[in-house]
Image (cartoon, rainbow, N blue to C red; front, side, top):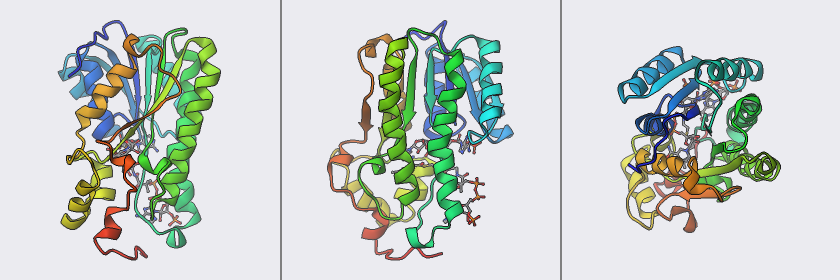
Length: 269
Ligand code: HXC
Ligand code: NAP
């Protein structure tokens, strides 16, 4: 893991209780940061806090839904009160599933947009009063389908495209405060919820997904954690407004969804 000293810094991780985001939270904790995590499930939050403390970090967590703007504002205020102003905010809460557009209900579409896009707005809004100015770094989490259209992903593609453009607008506005704003775009990261739901529901789909990655390996959660450690640090002090793929080159291919190649022509439920 990249060796950057985060002692005396406070990192807020939205959705930091499983998968990629938990690995990111652990990497910051291992680098000496005080880490605060939030997600919906109280039990997941407590387990994540225990894990972060076990790797040596000072950690706190609260259960809150990113769709609840008032609850999020209270949580951000409480966590900043406990551990100080935020130096890095990593905003990665998301929900996703495969569904053909014509069978997706309006509420299904709205749910994913509410979590991924409106939730990212709510996180940004809640943390702003508590981020260190100048010097802080906001890191959004997007996905390749924000720019590469993918079948069965109309909800997530629309939401993450919004996250990309929000990243750029915030970089314009927050540059004046000395706050850098960037986004990480992970490719298929193995052993994660997103990977099993979207890229590898069966062996054929998994093989096809692998064939679409020029480096011929799936990503690891540590790959994203290393990039987050770098982006949050002074080593990235002139990087703002960037959407950075961490995908083995996968977004360079004209990606077809693995499911389609595996012959799953219809996803009607
Ligand atoms: C079609 C679905 C559906 C599915 C839910 N819905 N799952 N529609 N196919 N598989 C519809 C429901 O029918 C409902 O609409 C609406 O969505 C809301 O569903 P709820 O279950 O009430 O929502 P909620 O409890 O808020 O849960 C949100 C969720 C859930 C997104 C649906 O899956 C979740 O909590 N996910 C979090 C974990 C996750 O998804 N991780 C992966 C992230 S990967 P109706 O009309 O019936 O009321 C990622 C990108 C990976 O983001 C990119 C890889 C390249
Ligand atoms: P994951 O394990 O399901 O992580 C999602 C996290 O967000 C969990 O901690 C979850 O905890 C939290 N969350 C979900 N809905 C929330 C809500 N409404 N309010 C607050 N927290 C919420 O998924 P992952 O696969 O590691 O994905 C992590 C990030 O990477 C996401 O932004 C995803 O879009 C992105 N991504 C993943 C891949 C991949 O291959 N996995 C590829 C591209 C992009 P609770 O359930 O407790 O709320």
